[in-house]
Image (cartoon, rainbow, N blue to C red; front, top):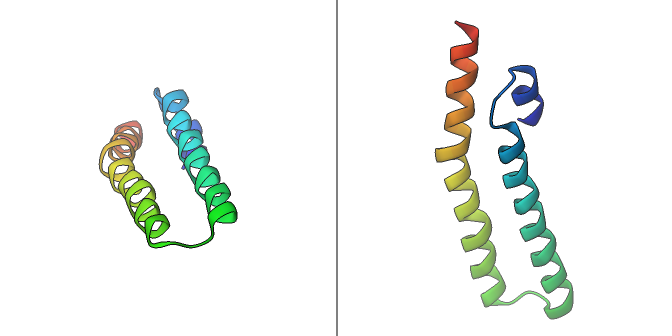
Length: 75
């Protein structure tokens, strides 16, 4: 995804990359918590909420912008 953005000169690449970096931090934090506390129902809920919501929002909002830019750049 980031490679496509760079190739198409996506103007909001820096912000989009920051979204990805933020997501990586959320995942690392969840892994750390899982290592400390082990699997729990609360952890399943946190994964579903944090990661699931991030993916849905990211695809529906941010990736739609990228796709629109790429389509426009090809015309």
